[in-house]
Every structure is written in structure tokens, then in C-alpha cells.
Image (cartoon, protein in one colour):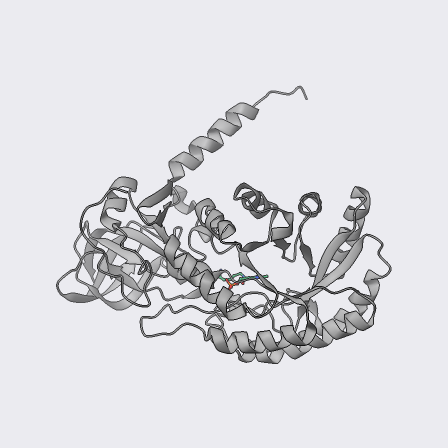
Length: 427
Ligand SMILES: Cc1ncc(COP(=O)(O)O)c(C=O)c1O
Ligand SMILES: N[C@@H](CCCC[NH3+])C(=O)O
């Protein structure tokens, strides 16, 4: 790791990268900006926190890799014994590359294609979480063609009230596309008996994301438990109970974590009551605080009585503020004298391209580095090439080691691949 000797100005509680001294200026100089920087030690600490909370029952933590599918992050979680929750063939491919095998994988999502179901069955995934009757029939047909029996779980929509900071990140409420409405579950469970190539091994749910208290889980668990009891009464050998992800992390400096112990207490009680293996699918909780987006200030601008800080990162690099009006703390990497109330905006041609509005900020000049905090979850994975911009680099820091992947390397690999497979065919 190149070292500049300068210490980041932000390793305080509630921020990211507090678990180790990460030489951000040296990383920015070596890799360029914008770049995501992840801390392996923070991910270790977060996983340990959850492992300790659930240690008293048989359980497995399946990281929802949609939150962060960087290979170094996945490899670390694999080494630490986690499994993964995937939602596409692409995620299955990345999971395999990171060392996960079939039984480490649960496959969620409302729109799995036949090809994705085939691949999941070829890999012998632990569970395919079924989200509709049509999907159930498709899985049975695909498994039949492969001559196997697909292990499935039914994802119940418990239809409870879920309190999240934005409507787009609720999933377990009535009328949403996710899961099987709770009144339909018994019918689907019964249908499984008619389908020779599926075996119902679990029931699960996922309530939503960034859920700061245990109330929705408290409301939903009895509904999941009753579905489990009916499925068992109907003769199914249920082995797993999946409570999804959703645990909140602090984005504001004065916010606390979701109360893991409160959450664990009610989930543990339910798991004990069933005697089943508990599956958890946390995404954000494991990685959000382990990541920051490092961006350079390009310009200061004063217009119509307002101050703007123009950064080289935009909504294509981190879309959460534009998509969910999400708050991310923004700190100067090196100490700056004075503050200014400013909008922090990116270079994209959209008025929604901002990271902060009218926010007291360090009075930075062009060339200063900013750290957009709590960006390790749904940061890079939701980034795009909008405005034909390259995606940010990603750097994983682990003590004095670091692993870098840049867009140039990704594109070079793609082009190499394309060249290797380019061939003309006669029509
Ligand atoms: C099925 C499923 N499991 C797990 C997660 C992970 O959620 P979170 O990152 O909030 O823990 C999600 C995303 O909301 C999801 O859709
Ligand atoms: N992408 C969302 C979380 C939703 C996860 C998928 N169900 C976020 O950035 O907050």
C-alpha cells in the first residue's frame, strides 16, 4: 500500500473505515478518483456482530450480494464462513468465482429466467426462493428436464407495515410484487405435492431494507410461523426458516445502528420454536459502513446566492441520493478550516445529480478529497455508465494489503474476451 503519512480526517465512530488507518490520499493518488474504498476489518467486525447475536441457534448468514459484489469482498465473506443470497445468473457466476459452492447459495427474486433456474440447479443451490405460482411450475419443469428435484422455499409476503426511509425499499407490504400473498401460501404449499420435481424445504420472507426497529419483524414472524406450521402439517419436510435481510445502519452522524439484540431476541425465539435452521440475508448491515466513495472537488461555484461544491463523482457512481433522496455523510479527507453551506453536486447533466443540498460542509477548495460515507452497500453495484462515464474504481484495504479493480481493467478484460470469441458466421 502506498503510504502518504497523512491520516484520514474521518475515522470517528459512525463513519466508515474506523477499524484501520486507511491512507486515502495515497489511494486516490495511485488509483484516481472517484473510487470506492472498502475496509476488510469493518466487514469482519460486522459479520462477527451478527454471528454472535445468532450463535445460540443453528443458522447461516447468506450475504445479499446485490449490496456489494466486489470479488475481494465476496472472497472475504466466503473465508469467514458466510453464504450468499443471489438474485441473478450474474451473481451466481460471481459467487462461484469467489469460492462459494451450491450449498452456500440461496436464490431470491421475482423474475428468474429458465436459464438462471437451470444454472442454479446445475450448481445444486441450497434453496430457490419461489415468488409466484408460475415460477413454481417453471422450476418443476426445469428440474424435471434435468432429472433432479429442486429444493425450494416459499417466500411469504407477510403483508405487514414496514417503516423504511423510502417507499422503494419496502418489500413485505400488501400489494407489492414480492413473495406470495399470505392468503395464497397454503394453496401453493399444497400444489407442491402435485409437482414431482420440487421439494419444499423452507419458508421465508424479506420485509424491506434499512429497517431501524424490530416492530415489522415482530408483526411478521407469527405469520411466517403459521405458514411453517401449516406446511409441516401438510407433510412437507421443512428444514429452513429464512427471515431475509433489512437491518438498518446509521447514515447520519448522530444515528445508532438498528438494535441487533432486540431483533435477534425475537428471531431467535421464533427459530427455537420451530427447531429449524435459521437463514438470514443481510446485505447493507455487513458492508455499508465498510465503504466510502472518495471523490475530488473539481470546482467551487457561486451562483444565485448559493455555494456549490462540484465533485468528480456523480449520480452514476452513487445513485442513492438521486433515487431515494438518501442522506450520506460527506467528510473532507484532510482537515479543512472553516465551513460553508453548500450543495454538493456531480458532473452529470441531471438536476437530481447531487449528494447534498444546503448542507454545512468543510470549506474545501478544488483538489480536495471528500469521502462520501456509508457507501459500501448499494454503491458500486448500482453504479452505471450514464453520460458515458467510466464506473469508479474499487479498492479493498486489508491491513497493509490492498486489492484494486479499475474500469480500465474491467474493459480490457471485456475486450479481450470479445476478441477471443469474435467469429464470423455465414447467415
Ligand atoms: C430478498 C432479499 N434479501 C435480502 C436483501 C438485503 O437487504 P438489506 O441490504 O437491507 O439487508 C434484499 C434487499 O432488500 C432482498 O431483496
Ligand atoms: N438498493 C436499496 C436497497 C434495496 C435492496 C433490494 N431489495 C438501497 O440502496 O437502499
